[in-house]
Image (cartoon, rainbow, N blue to C red; front, top):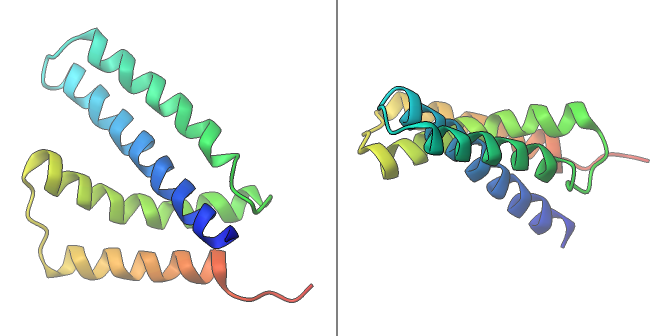
Length: 111
């Protein structure tokens, strides 16, 4: 059950961080205005709180593992929001990152 909670928190964190960065990008680079950018800042702030809800208390481990989730999630976001088409190297890299997440977070540890 803790693993499912952890995965759900990683997914929520990814939506908040990637979505927040995308909203800021839209507000600034695509000239959609300060409301978009402000919503992005709020989402990024919420991401910071969601990360603290992970069952594991090791900050470095959580952020290292989240890096892999961020890589894969960014590609998914790009497909859905921007029509980006990842190539086989994008997909392979994302899979490698997610394997890394699994090893870092969910490998059995003694003690």
